[in-house]
Structure formats: structure tokens, C-alpha cells
Image (tube, rainbow, N blue to C red):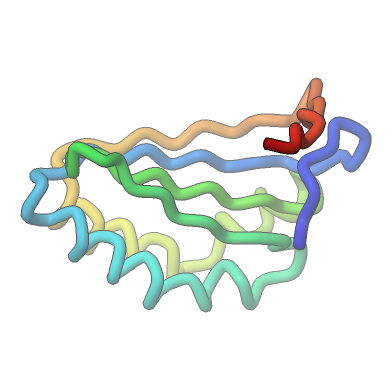
Length: 111
């Protein structure tokens, strides 16, 4: 398990896809099938998919060991092919790159 930590130097890519509710699961299925590409590349640490409860968004969260690893991976031709399929399933999407600057864990409270 990858820990989100501001001292790790990781880069996080967050992709937010806007979908018609009837296409949400199809996009999730596609992303799960295609996860092997980024996961097979040097520097990819984790790959997560989240879905909105209203059915209108899918979020893909990918952690990379460094910005250099991410730049190298983005040159892989498989990413362009995947983008074509995503465009068929999503109305819109936005990709942004982030670094962790602060984290704090909550203490578990016994009931």
C-alpha cells in the first residue's frame, strides 16, 4: 500500500471524467482493463478509480515515483490509444498533476 506523504517526492495525476450516468460503469470497466499499461511502466506506484455517487463523474488517481517517471511514461504510445476510447465514453475530462504538501491522519475514536 502506498502512503500519501509530503516527504516522499511522489507526483500524483488526478483525472476527472464527466460521464452520462449510463456510461459511468463502462468507463470504470475500461480503466480497470487498461490499468496494466501504467502499472507496467517504471515509476508507477498506484492506480485508483473512484466513482461519484450521482453517476456523473469518474476520478482516476495515479501515483508516480517522480515527475521524471511521469514524463517518461507519458511518451508511451499506448496512452494515446486509450485516450481515444475515453473520449467515446466521457463527455469531458481534465488531467492535473499534483505533489503532496501536507497530510495528517485522524486518530481513531472508539465508539
